[in-house]
Length: 294
Image 1 (tube, rainbow, N blue to C red):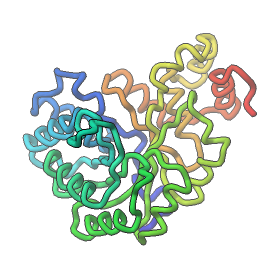
Image 2 (image 1 turned 90 degrees about the horizontal axis):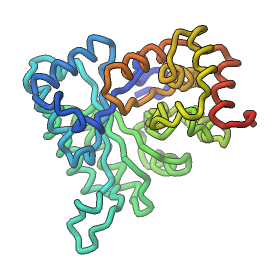
Image 3 (image 1 turned 45 degrees about the horizontal axis):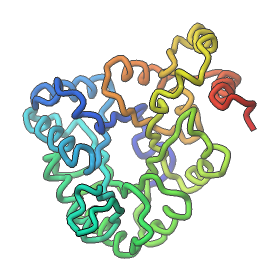
């Protein structure tokens, strides 16, 4: 299994995140959601991001029910899902506290649970959702290897890991870690200057950029005049510019769009296939930082 840049999800401009699926009751009927998924696939967006904690599993269940209503649809989609966070209200111990559980038995059950909820025979990519200081890397690696060997998952990766954290896990398995899903946007760009992005390139991990639109912060940070001038040159709105800015980085990070609104998906899709002039790329960063780039 190669880890060369571009061999994992090489034609994927954008990943659609399902974290806010429950905020869209109009999509929750199985056949309606199946039609929405099919439409996205027809637009070239066939990768969907999940996690077991999204809606306490409800997002995966709705997605799975939708796939079950449309024969052949599950063969057209690729699913990334994550596990390893236990929220406080789901902690069955007396402590009722949020904690991380990158533990062999827990992850084994998490993979089986995700397959059941999603009604899939195989998950394309399974990620450990957060670094767990108590993780037994050897035991976790063994469980992931078994899941790949048994055809339950195809690829493995991590989420929100720093270089030494993913390297410690990588040392314990011959399977490549294909990606790290971590925050990246115009408003959260320190990783481009502190070596983290370079480490991902060196280790051949694809960056899956969550919160690529910075949770609505950009509208306050980027002057309207700059957005207007940039739109005149590129044809992109601010959201499109934010996605184009990410995609232009070496390694072509893939934005994980948290919004399911049609206009934001369209804007992000346009940005994903547009190259920005280099001075504009830096000008946008300068505007968000309210200071010259370092």
